[in-house]
Length: 213
Image (cartoon, rainbow, N blue to C red; front, side, top):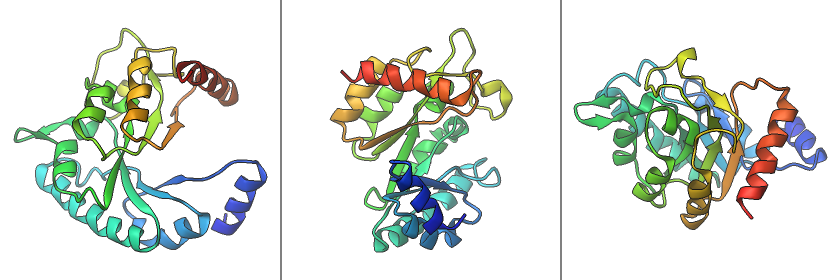
């Protein structure tokens, strides 16, 4: 679908489109599309496996992110990157996420933190908000089932998704802290649902409404 047609459909549905994901491999070709769609945040969905397996690979991705960040700003948008659990693997004493944030310019590169994948890696989303003030302006929200092991490995063994407010993440701490730290948008993004998607979404929506009161 063209950006113009997609934007028309979104607006006709009474929705807005502040943020969109694009793959690393063809990100260079997607700036005009993102601009026409009306995005405020243009997000790279993940570091490719070919780079996300070494410190040098993450540093190379960081250099690319800075370049994309500068181009996005020139076009009136903000660049950001999204995480999974694999960015929390350690390379010479630093995790992939630490390498990305250390080696990118905060003026050009934001982190769209996925709270589930941070928790899946055994880390705390609230702690990340405090550790990187100003770097996280958007969030992905989904919850994590109880009684499952943490992992920094990719694959189905890391997929323990459930609706926001029905799992183990401490939303009563995360959401007020996100507001305090300047997070502008939060998106429910549950990769797999056991319920029909709209039923699943309503549970997350209702729980978030209660948590934000």
